[in-house]
Length: 262
Image (cartoon, rainbow, N blue to C red; front, side, top):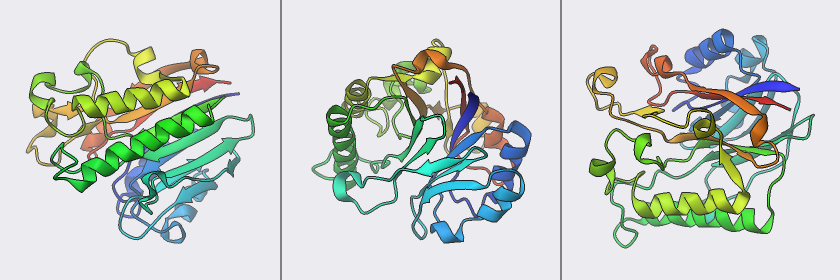
């Protein structure tokens, strides 16, 4: 059963309901994973999405912050969530499609502004969150699974606009990249986007601070789609919908897509 999946940090699902609908209607992914929905689940505009063919929702939310949701036109079973680093945040949820594929939707903590856990508690929480992800995948190695989300790390030199200038900037520091690599290795995950697009600069996030984000093009690839080794070869057609960053009242992230022939 082939299906297309997209992941998008939407930065408030209620505020940006119109562009979520636009994406669903124009691009038609079978599954859309959203992060930073900033809404309790019962306040999500789920009926609006059901009206256009996405009746199935697996989500965890909270008022004003964080939150993750999986919208699907395919039946999907809620298979739980985990509170990594005991933060009490809605940052993970998992769903299972009828073909047995498990989808993990993550919103990894951003980590604050200073890459030093001694002076920045948020940076320490981010590293602890990643460490617990790693340990979980070591103890319960995933199979036939997809991991998506805003992982808030751009791991490769060509995942940022300037490797040299961002080495000491949270999201591209060596310690974060190392922690993310350990998570990937623990679960036997393949970076699907870079499997399909192995070379060249590639971004999924552009700061709101830029007067002209498109012209400045100082982006980072913070949003990811991974697959376990048993299904990694069934993926293709990865892309980032850069134009969505320029839609009306946009998120600062763009959606990332991949197709799975399973």
